[in-house]
Image: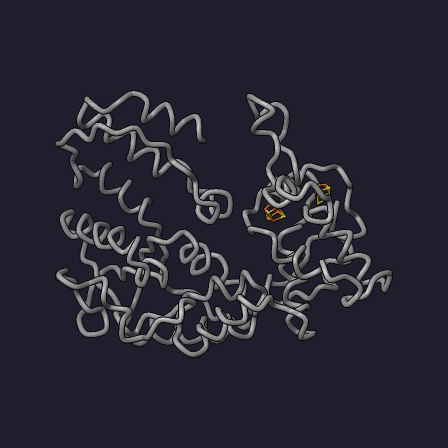
Length: 342
Ligand code: SF4
Ligand code: SF4
């Protein structure tokens, strides 16, 4: 067991994880699901990094061993060309942390992110492609090297309130990737249309919206992240934002759970909701009714950042089930598949 670290997550240094690293139980629960939870060996392994590489250094346990060696001087930051690769191979899926926290009160993912921060502070990290991404955030407020003026392109043909000019109950935070990626722009367009049809008073910040900071903090770059947090909070305050709806799982996790972990953070006075929570409530309240059959079999894939990291599992499933009840014609496979995926 480990002593709880009495500091906000982004106040912690690598040294704060010393006790956890020394106490690593080598139990392997960061790589495997509990036997009583899985139906087949196919689903037993939970760490995508380890599953791909088959080498312990790439697991949660491996990170703790590396951190211990670095802290105690058994190993130097420059001793291995593989150190950067090992640190940045992690998908931040959180599977290791979920099991390890429950069983051993340790936080292998948060420790691994503190290691990335240390590598950045030492000038060793990040990887070249990440540097480009971080520079893009600094220069354009988005990670995709896209001009700020193009941020509103997804709203063409859509009538939506400008939250910077008129009052609205909810701010729809589009997020950089959905706003700029032509392959998924339709998702936020349709989401806004559904919200509007259900009479939700929703607006957007348009060009005033900037990156939430998720890519920066997942790479371990606290300085850029803290700057984005500060600027976003100023914007929310300036326009009186009290409720935010996100479509992107990463934005949701970051705004709701990473922001309060920033040192010196004022009390958060706005609510952050994932769109699946809002839609589930609208369905329950009878404000969304399903009338047409969609003959389609779907499998719900839980995004790590709303599932494991935030515990949102039921809301999307409730919507799928309600669709089935409402139309009473939907394929039974839809619900069965979504339950199997769970
Ligand atoms: S990281 Fe946690 S779950 Fe993995 S071996 Fe160490 S103590 Fe066990
Ligand atoms: S967060 Fe990283 S180390 Fe942990 S299970 Fe996921 S990929 Fe593996």
